[in-house]
Image 1 (cartoon, rainbow, N blue to C red):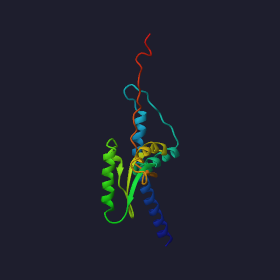
Image 2 (image 1 turned 90 degrees about the vertical axis):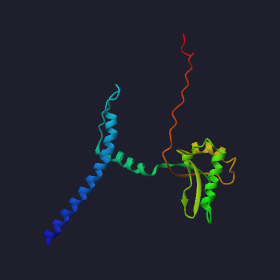
Image 3 (image 1 turned 60 degrees about the vertical axis):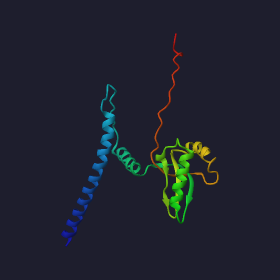
Image 4 (image 1 turned 45 degrees about the vertical axis):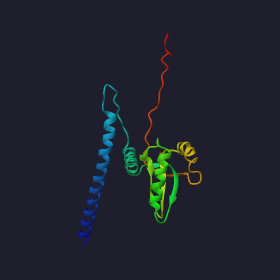
Length: 173
């Protein structure tokens, strides 16, 4: 009887360890890609060697896994919400109206999520409240009673490359 319990315990432990190693291997493949990119020499640039504890490696792995799926916490501007009959159509009509008033606004960041029992019209993917506030000031002119900033999960926002202007006359001697 005790041999059966002992063998079943060993079998359970081996199955657990096999599953853990498989998950660790998937994360290792992702991280190896990152560390491989950093440690290889490209186009005459330098080479980086990374030495770290397994704990740091696991933290980075967990961070990648958490942020890979759901985006990050950020802000959007909610323009309206509707419930009841034809609420989805009302939200789509408001989105079309928004696109007409703000044609330069990227249509990929106009969202109509359903949060029972409401359809909501939200725009933007802003990393902080300040970024959202700049656009909010323009939007509230058209939607003064319904527009406000909400904290929510957002997609990774596009980072604009820095604009650098060079004064060609500055270094002339």
